[in-house]
Length: 241
Length: 298
Image (tube, rainbow over all chains, first blue to last red; front, side, top):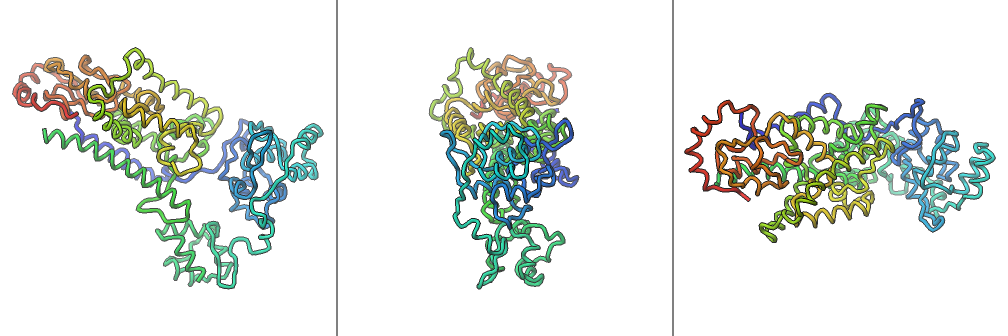
């Protein structure tokens, strides 16, 4: 049998197109990231696989590192929501520092080192040789460092500075849904539950979005409206009206 | 001739479709990061729609039951679909689907206009042939290092990711450099990334050795005009083989009697062996005279 272009075209449609449809039906074509980190040979979640997209809540879930400890150790706002705060968000909060002639950003690898020291699980970093002074002090106060570790890290600290000097002061306000004189401010990290708690009624939600309040109220408003084909910016403004 | 050009268009349309699809996905991903609604389709990351992601996570998947960082289940599924397609027809993915191959091919058309017959013939065979195996070294390095580190190291120099994600801060300078060199190189050599460096192309190329639908040349009716050799983007010596199993073939069909070969049934993709080539010779003798004027399309 002679194979021509049209046969190849059909094969692409059937195998690739049809395959994707079938896989979607079987829930085997998920384009969202699987967030579960890989496990070590001993069956524990691997510190090396902590990712920038992991939230503090996920770190607590997989590694049993309390989110409150990370918040305190890194000087994050006390009202930080562990379920929403991703490790990569740190680079938007802290100023980069110059260490031994090289730039360093407090981010995922810093949390890996902190987690390793806090939980006493080995992790060898190839980029983090200094920790914020606040973080080292937290580890010492909570008796998480051995004598040798204490000696090393006390000599390898730097002062943590915020990009926004008002960062901590801003925590006096409501954390996600900010009630202002003119209404509510919805951000990309506002969940449906927070929206409802913030005073938006279910009727108002339906009126603005054209859809009923989802059963899973932990979903982000942004994700919900985008999933329904709506423009997040417009919906956000309508909630603020 | 017009009929042949029309058939040539089928591949072009498929290539443009997938190129547009990837551009749309990239734009949507950018929009979603800005809080804007995606256009027409969803907004997955480029890693989610590249089958090579499935290849590099395969070790981690079977040993630890997890995908490596930034790799999605969809990439793993796509890998199996592409491998299935390749087992049947050879690296159709490279010749028809891969948007980065398409971009190189389009730039190559400019090179062909500038350099005419010299285009795609700049590198001496002595250097070119061993370089063609470099992509297997890259494949091995990427797979082994990814298995060891559990990280998507390839994205640090992946020109495909750099091209379609150029707005992202995740794109490294090294990948931009590789992208630039590849695009410039495409003006002189057809598909330089595919030929020398692409690890996915390397893996899919192996399937040319045992794919089900084979590219066959009928020696009995071939007129040795060598049009097939001239049109092959991968510089394969087609006119000297009976069954083309070269690891570089991308199943583009350009050489076949559907497009370039002037002799009907002389060179085509077929799934079953010819029983009696002499019969073909008799049957096609008329076509041979009639079609030999058509020549190639390139």
